[in-house]
Image (cartoon, rainbow, N blue to C red):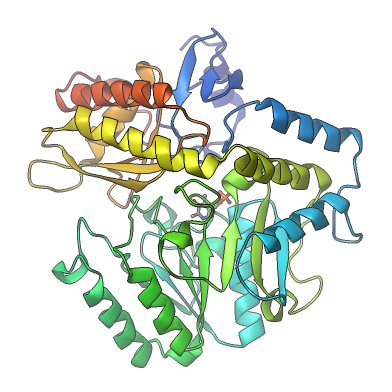
Length: 438
Ligand SMILES: *Cc1c(COP(=O)(O)O)cnc(C)c1O
């Protein structure tokens, strides 16, 4: 890389603490599903910035909405006043989520501050000292959200002293050999009877698809049964829809696939379309527990709130959940066709426009080096995707919800080529040594 390149300047100026790099991508502008480097080379972005760019880049109708909000800046914060776009967003979120009238909305910047707020509020409001969540869960990168997570990248973090983590229902590597998840539910019931008494547990944090933990889709009926178990013990279920919610799975909410309705919903990433905004929707008994309890200065600011309203309007107006179902099914088929017969592709799974490709060695074990090579090679071919998973071996696709079939086909072709090249050893391991991802 030339010494004055954008990437070299980034290396010289920006802290490593917040970097998760897989290749030396430079970005100077974006449009639709494509990011462009300073030389004008386009990259098809099948990550959408980890799902944040739900409408792709520079969507004209969304830009107009944000621009109008800036021209008429209705304050900077909701902490000490009622801000029109923030109230409108909260009312909109209440309308589009199930539950009774006595619910409220908390607005934040990120999935992390939202989950941290939930973890603190459920403990304070219920007086119960314990939390449950899944091994491999990623609920955020702040101390309070890491405290209820269990992702291997956070091995440095301090966990909540009352946290109990159980395996996520993984149909590819099933708990106790039972792909239905039944054995895992029995295990959870045993814990709730003995070592983690159910009446001491305030909440169970649940990703409806475990994304950073390896793009795991629960078996049919699992979350419904888990919800019933939690209800019996008075445990609140928290559905973290930060990455997979708001149309991505083909329905507006990911939990709608499960015949299960959570008590508390958490939104982030795609809600803001690339601007920072998150939201919690839940019972007033929890979210009105106290005043001045969980707040940051620019929470509920009119620009972020308007950006979210723009995203929600466009998802509805343009039928983007239906597009995610349709284009996602097409992309899945194209991937299965191009990757067919490759012994290193252990599993291809997902729902709508959230898809994981699990790469394995000859013995079926996780193959992280193949994943590193594959995403690097894909980038050389003009495609952006990253990998996730406890074994760092699952390529994750969370493209913009506006993806069309032409770009889905192009993406599948480039990714198929990249995985084939990675498996055949046609990728320079020295070039990727500096990009260890996670
Ligand atoms: C990314 C993510 C978070 C954290 O969101 P940030 O915006 O990075 O703070 C929380 N939960 C899930 C499921 C996520 O994917």
